[in-house]
Length: 261
Image 1: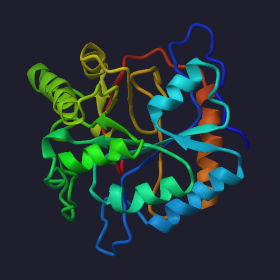
Image 2: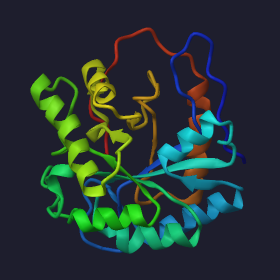
Image 3: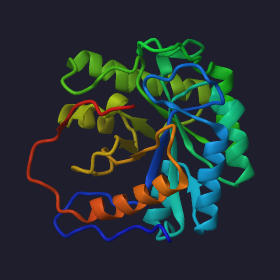
C-alpha cells in the first residue's frame, strides 16, 4: 500500500492529503483510561513498523502539507499527538526516532507544567516550557491546542479570540519561532472558529474524523484507539481513501464534539 495525495474534485475547497493519524498519550501506564487516550509505546512501535513495511514514513502535519504542495507526498502519512502530555518525550520520541519518523504535538498552551484539568478522568501531566522546547529540538513540530481545551463551536467571540490567538503567542514565545498549526479540541468547530484560526495567522488546522469540508483549516484525521492493531491501522488508511473521494455536501460548517479526543 502506498499513501498518496488524491486529486481534489473540481469545484471543491477540500484539501486532500494522505492519512493523518491522531494519538494522545503514549505511555505504559496501567492506570484507568476512561477516555481511551493512552496507547502503549510497544503498540505505537508496531504501528510504525507496519508503516515502514508498507513503504510509508510518518511526518508532522506541516511537513506533509509542504510535501503535498511540492508533489512529494507519495509515501508519507501524518502523525499527530494531542494535548501535550509529558509522556510524549519519554515514550513517543524514542519510538519515533527509532523508525526515523516525526510528528506534530498539539499543546494546550495555558496548561504548561500543569495537568489535563479539562477532563473528569485521571490527571496526566502536561509538558512545561523546557519540555516543549526539547520536543522541537528533537525535530518534531509543535502546534496549538488552545489555551484551556474548550469546545470552540458556538464560543463567545472574545473567548474564541483568546483561545486561538493567545495560545499561538504563548507557544511562539516559548519556541522563539512561528507556530503554524492548530488543532480544535474535541473536534469542535464552526465557521467562526475556522475563520478565527485563519485570521490568527495559522497555516493550517485539523479536526477529527470529519471530512466536511476538509479544507486547509479543517483537515481530517484518523483517531487511533488504545487497542488498535496493525489491521485497524490499515483499515483506517483504506477508509480515509474512500472518504476523501466522496463529494462535499452543500451545508454550513458546524461541528460538535467527537468521541475520544
